[in-house]
Length: 73
Image (cartoon, rainbow, N blue to C red; front, side, top):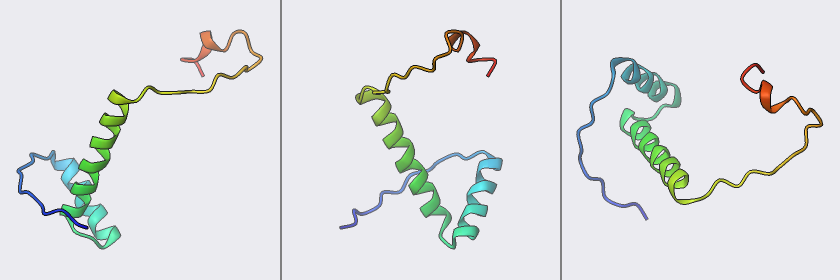
């Protein structure tokens, strides 16, 4: 089931708009659909980041100096 759309105005950087237009042509879809998908993905990312703790697995690299060299690597 598809929810009805609401109209909003969004200011877009010229470079971003060019990227949106290219993506629309490449995927044979509308610019509006590209923007809607981007908004949806951004909203999910923010919700996930703010409401769910990030559970990462611990691992042993065997390299005692690894943590100190992360930026270098």
